[in-house]
Image (cartoon, rainbow, N blue to C red; front, top):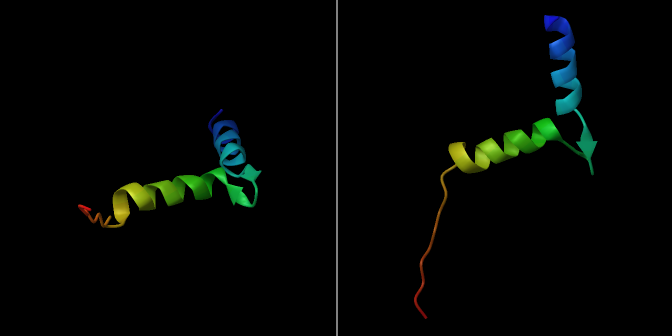
Length: 45
């Protein structure tokens, strides 16, 4: 049962849309929200 689940999860994560896989999207999202410092600049005009 366990190898079938791993195969299914791997198959889902490697689906590609416009040269980006779902796994790549998850990596980019984690890097953007959790790992990289965000810089915000407030301006009053």
